[in-house]
Image (cartoon, rainbow, N blue to C red):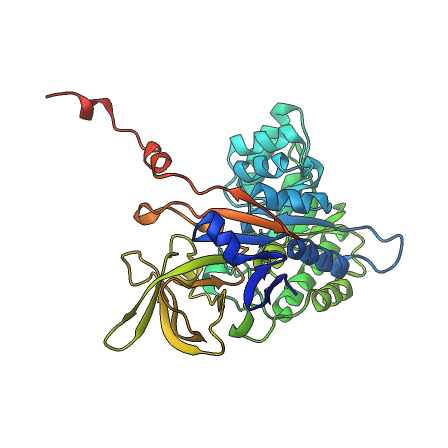
Length: 428
Ligand code: LLP
């Protein structure tokens, strides 16, 4: 459930009319609903928390990459979320938004020494290490700082997650994790290194997963590994089960499994593990808590197709171009039940600047406002200024309040990012 609903024929974000917002902010813009963010966090937390009193509460480390806006992270920080970060930039963002270092996990295959130093200085909860070379660098860096880093080795279980190839991470040919059968050797080598303590196993097989079976296979392999490692004398006290649970992109596909059924499967598989669990949900929390609002510039009748040309483009929302992703389209003020079939495109000079092909949807005309749903995750954060278009602003709504949580830059600011070298300014 989300809080983008029609009232008196106009789409609202909670209690705020999107027509009113567009008049204030201009288009295009992203709009997030606080109540939806909070609800998704609560639903996930309930689904993965132990039912009986006394069980250890899991760490829900929100995957900051999904939506790193400070206001979004701060909303989740207030709910007790931790953070999964993959760069020093995300680490700084999470800390700045109020997530304590003791609830931060650092993932990623390419952590540099400087990034490790920054995270070690903050005493973060855990490093998810993805290779022996990384373990060695972390050991050296931590030892030099007089620290001992808590490490989980991310394993690659060689499971096909059944999602888009570009967001699959758990197959042997992917760059992520260490092959699961080499994990005992990695733990043994890590034991000889100063400055790190290998206390856990991490896994993440991909994103927008719509089937629990591959996740169950991956978790089962992790369970077997934990038993093996313990038999080999390693004290394993943590397991990080990653993120990846898919969200409904509305009318595209059948709904993915619910957080509750994910939680049931997870509880069944992990019941004897006796570890502290971490989860790294991203899309599940923010995906359906956001929309992209755009205005129709004009309609164009092509030889074979009708094009709805809008003022948002692939630079604002790249997912359709990059992953052939479906985003539901709605009119902000539908014209009765009138429908149309059209290609929805942006103004950028590429054929790939297409949001939807031959889409059956509410009739739109020049000047109408429309929205793309499910644009709270991997959307604003993947925007860029291609074609010298301004980065898309972001708005957050809470009840009848709203605030710009990222302003639209000016063209002066855009141009001022570049510097013309002196020699071009000197007279010949
Ligand atoms: N943990 C790790 C280690 C990850 O790599 C990711 C996502 C997550 C957690 C969060 O996954 P989620 O719960 O959001 O599925 N840009 C793509 C998605 C890339 C996902 C990258 N990793 C998209 O727009 O679909």
